[in-house]
Image (cartoon, rainbow, N blue to C red; front, side, top):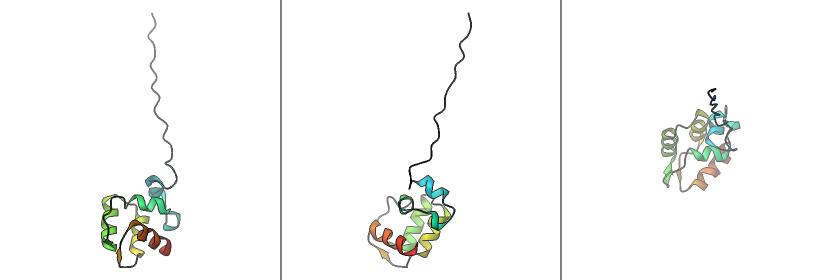
Length: 93
């Protein structure tokens, strides 16, 4: 009787959907960073929040350098919501 050979197939690794954390991590520069990928690193942020609060939160979420660079370009003000942050992202980008 012959033994059967078991072949295990690993799940194919696929790129994340556009705008996911993986795409932010691959962004080599600020210009390549999408708004949705940027916001992923600020998920769970409590508002109102200052610029330094945003930077600290992004770092806790292991944000790539491109995300931190964008946050460092933000005006030093209090942001009331994620929508305020998105507006500022559009201004600096």
